[in-house]
Every structure is written in C-alpha cells, then in structure tokens.
Amino acid sequence: MPTYTVTYSGVILSSDVKQMIAQGITSTHNKITGANSYFAQVIFKETHAGDHFMGGKPVLEPQIFLHGQIREGRPNALKQKLICGLRDQLMIDSEFQKDQVWVYLVDLIPAQMIEYGEVLPESGGEVEWFNNLPEQLKDKLSAMENR
Image 1 (cartoon, rainbow, N blue to C red):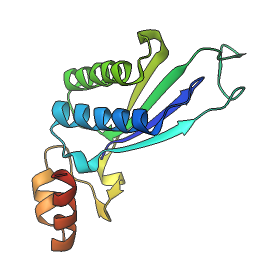
Image 2: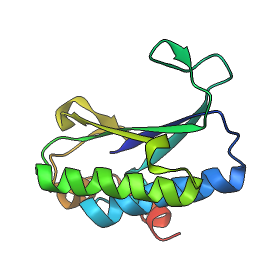
Image 3: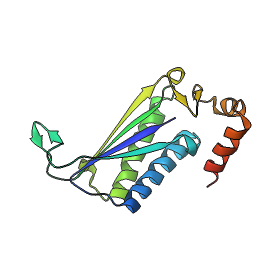
Image 4: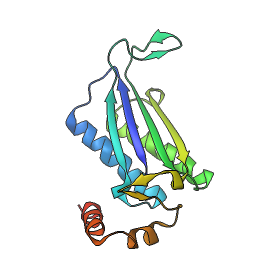
C-alpha cells in the first residue's frame, strides 16, 4: 500500500545503505500504521550532478528526499508520527543531518489503487481483503511477512 520513493543527490548510497534504509522505512511504516510489511515498496532514484536544483541553483550538499504514497483514511496525528518517524529513521540510516532530509506523504484513495492484482481496502480492512485473496497469493504474502 505504501510506495516510498527515495531520491538522493550529492552522495552515492551503497547497496548495504539502501537495504538498511528500505528496512527502516518498512519497519517504521509497519510499527506506526500497523499495515503488513509486504505492502511497503521502497524505490531508489539517484540524481546526478546538475540534475537537482533549489532556489534555481544546483544543490551542492547531499540531500535525501522521501516521497511516500499512502492510503488515505488515517488520522492526522498518526500521519504526523509517521512522517517524523520516517525522517528520524532516514537520518539514522543515511547519517544525514535533519536539514538534509525531506519527507512528503501523499494520501491516495484506496479504491483507486491495485496491488497484487486487487483493489485495495479502506484503512482497517486489510484482514478481510487478505482473507478474500486466492490461496496461492495468501501463501506468497505470508512468506514475505515472515522473512
């Protein structure tokens, strides 16, 4: 359900750091929202020198930008906890300073989203959604959750 795109500039992230960031984002989303971890996607995009500008000028110091698309329906207090938790986790995993980390969350209407071939449920309807999946897909998702 959540898709997080990590765009980074002015730094090269190793595979190990990307793995750590992906696990941190997934874990933070799971702990704060209660959503199963198999829903969290994390995609990395590197910007090259001259491809990232602020105020019309090239960005010179390392920056990391997290754009998270999540299902709407969660209370603002929970989303505030999530956005701050994601920022804090990114700071730990990337070793960037607070002013080098950007996090945006965007709510999407569940009825306008398909994952694993099925329209997503409203927030809180995950168990019923899961129970109505084909057995083979349930097995696949359960295996992903238990890794």
